[in-house]
Length: 139
Image (cartoon, rainbow, N blue to C red):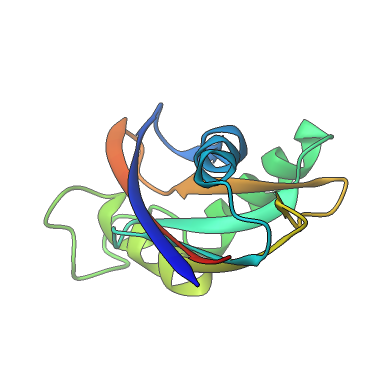
């Protein structure tokens, strides 16, 4: 049994879904393990992780629109606005999604479905440098 850890640094362009499948898969492939489990952990409170449709960009647009309606930027709606009007809505969106994913490694490959991709969901308007902690355990 082996373990490997790594931090992926992801520059987001601002609010929206950033596909991180390729750099995640490249790191996993370089570890040379055949079977195991990958944990992906987002080290932030205003961004999150999703496994989602990777073929039709309308899915991502619809998700972004849904979360904008669910946790709107509305002056006076929230007490916490220390970093601006998108601050508290970003925390709500992160609370409703995930900060950690577990993905099996089977036959040396991440066991993602045909149309699945790994996404960092940026909930703030401005670009950010985000960190994803990767932990792979296996053989």
